[in-house]
Image (cartoon, rainbow, N blue to C red):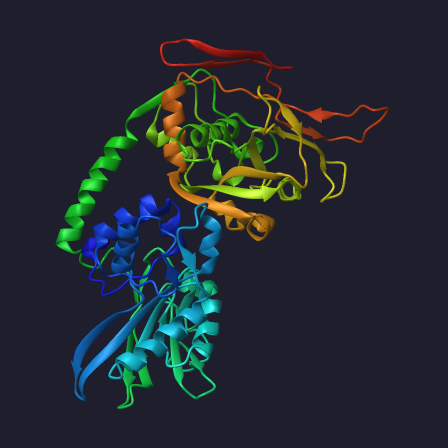
Length: 495
């Protein structure tokens, strides 16, 4: 769909690196030579021919020219990506330089080689707060078009220091600052920062006036709320119709069956082990071990209970049932963390009872003591052994390093899981989508017979004489995994 957009230039975001070089190169080739990568060094690419192609597809700068009342003008377009992207990559074939250093060097070099180029516009993907620092510190910069933080800025004709009211008043709570934000450098140079929220809800419009010395003297804006009432582009609509028809067809497809109810109710999944939570996390773990490149070492999987919304009845079920039960598609992340971080995650999971932050898990066995105060409720944690010949669980080691599968929502620190974002040693973000992972698993193992295996145990009353009341499901069942054709793969009696 990007090919339908009349972009002059684009920069890369962190998500473009989640599938490694094998995902990035076809993407760049398909879109064409409109990207700019001022702070990205591709010298780590082993294949010299591919290295040169990347530099051509995403060079340090691009120059566009246009005619004005004062004669020909030349604009240098730069692009930067947050260096934190480095943490998403297992292979270091790309290096992300400090944005300020890379931009300053490129502008200085270009001004010496092309003195007629005096207007410098940077496309950024480092977030609004970082954009303000860059605007203040990089000489000769004129405009930053930012992203990554999904910041909503809005113009205010009465007061250019305070955000105005967006066209959708419900977004007032998200309006962080005025559009564009004006930064004054120590030299007195004016730098404008623009960013326009997320998901294509608004179209940012910024018209800038430059003087004879190519410095910003004025601007006017008119951001637009994009609505269904606006006329659609015929060619784009034609392409979208193909996808819509395919989606309607897929929603009605029977993808599998279950012999028992897949319990996904808020009443159960937000405070204890539930069968749909088990199914989801088991599917994640199975997926990374079977389809993930160099991810077979992933030991456990976690999702927040808030991602699960509805149960699925026994019998055959359609894609529409899965999308209703798991309505928030997300992309897979493999995070590398120490055991101490895993323990903090589990403590946060039960910091407050019966909330969407509760973690459904696979590859771990956790005992919570809810009679203890918050922060002290994880009584024991066992995780799949990393080196054992046969699968078994061993106590979590706070200093050991583990690879955990989760989704982007948690990996970036949402739902209060800030420890995951702050303490992760690295993260591989992939384009594997949650719905696709579950559907593949369901098709492989239907008819399903999910079970509660005691992976989550909860103490709800004070311990007396070494005994305590533990909260389990009222269901006692056989664990049976049945492959296509009816062959029994495994069986286990739970108590």
